[in-house]
Image (tube, rainbow, N blue to C red):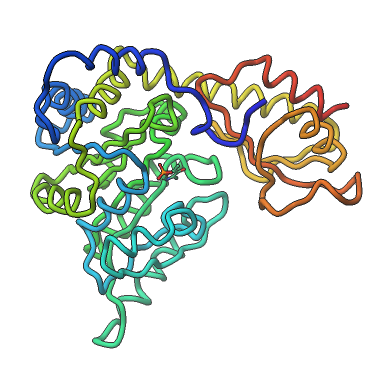
Length: 350
Ligand SMILES: *Cc1c(COP(=O)(O)O)cnc(C)c1O
């Protein structure tokens, strides 16, 4: 009954097999391995972007911070949602790698930025004189941090504002696959065809061990990105093991199959929770994360039986009034089973 995060799940066997298969003989270091060439070709084909430049790093924080740094001057603002991962969970890495850029927080329900709020934030910055931070890139997370998905219309409403302000757009796709299968669109539609310039393309949470791709749809940014990755200590020397993971992830649609499994389990879990009296949802379930409330007694039974998940916010306690409703964040991953879910539901019900 592990629902704390999708990064607590195991790596898919195909990824482990690919690493073992890559572990023979010699391969050029630092991204010059043959598997990396294959990864680049696969991503260019998938994204219908023959010019795109593709780089691998081992963490999503590095992908975001390095990708954003290539788009941002130190005196600029990066616009993002108030609960964006770059704001809440990266220990200031975007600020550090950009050499001190500011994050401009934008409100919006269910983890999605409200276009009007983005526009007014940009307009406010645009008053800028020499005393003020200047406008800089927009960063959109899809799947959002609250488990919702920006539709293509949502994305385009935001990127249109960014483009008319002359600012570039980054997408944090730590859960890109979950959003994509939820929307049923193409990778190109969710990115460059909707105005995305730089993508952090997640692998880790969806069945890899540790690999994320940075996709630069504008190849002019490539050299600067390469220098920043090296200088930031994120250019792997035994790179073939990153390449092997990403190559297997993209082979035979594995990445889509894994995300579909996680999303399907999440839909099943949401349906089972909805069937329990007195439960309610904090955010709609659109990908592989569920935000729901039920009474403390149910949480106590589930957690005492070994269910592992975070309260939302995380400082709720099991001590207190039995009937008080407390919200939880439950995350499914590719390996989540119906049995895990049935057990959890059984204990919540009591
Ligand atoms: C997990 C996650 C990341 C990457 O986190 P790392 O721990 O650095 O790999 C980035 N963005 C979002 C939205 C995430 O959920």
